[in-house]
Amino acid sequence: MAWARGGGGPDGRASDTAVAEAPARAKSRYACWDLEEGAPVVEGRYALASLGGGSRYEVYLAWDERLFALVVAKLLRPDLVADERALGELRREAAILRRLGHPALVRSFGEVLDGPRPHLVLEHVEGPSLLRLIRRHGALAPEQLLPLALQLVSVLHYMSREGVVHLDVKPANVVMGVPPRLIDLSIARPLESAARLRGAIGTDAYMAPEQCDPAAWSGLIGAAADVWALGATLHHAAAGEVPFPRGPGARDSADPVVRFPQLASAPAPLRSPVAAAFAEIVRRMLARDPRDRPTAAQVAAELEPLVAAVPARPRFSPRRGRLAF
Image (cartoon, rainbow, N blue to C red):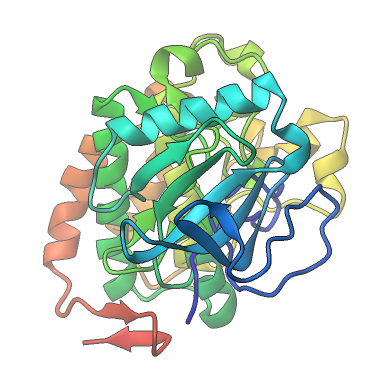
């Protein structure tokens, strides 16, 4: 059995994620709950396996007696339980998850915001992350890439219509289930809140220029940032590499252009067997100025004929780890 994963991608920081790729427990530099198999998260919800996490959250596969199903429990780390800012961020994520519902977006089954272990209860999605798939098998074939692109852009269109921006779209946050899911809304926020951001936020390699340098793009962080991130994700999936490669140590550079080459450079050419029309869509999604990017709805309209022309639509089989027809 495999589990969905967040985590940092190449050229990017490790973000706080909803779920992890495998149940192996590594020593963490963060405070941990260290729940053993069968230990209660709360009454009626029991930890089965550690799935990793990020700086703010520890994540467990769990059994929920009321749902009578496997779920993912995303817990605040023990040293943050009394931290009002961390609790506020958990409440914000819970509120956003409650208002959203889309076939290709991870679902919430509730939250516990009081008590000794504040946590979210999330859908358990079986399947590897898109990042893991790329690392194991290389770039995706057009028959898999094009339908995936349309499913993901449909989520972004829906979220923008609901007034929410994800801010961390990347291959590690795409679970290749049936259908694929976009996960991890840890830093998602309403559009009006995103427009007020003043500091860099996200995962470096997939951050739109306005996320990298909000001061230079005052008030322009919004739905177009997610379109840019999806463009970077699709480029990575189509080419097997990120559109703005960086050298070692760039993450810690004091020079913003070294850390964020997307602020000054053009994306690497998209060399892949995908149609030239798809490469052109991705190029426009990666426009530096958010006002020059297509909307998610416009991207979907351009993708639809490309998807319709795919001769066969393969389905990824999580259990077999390969394409199934």
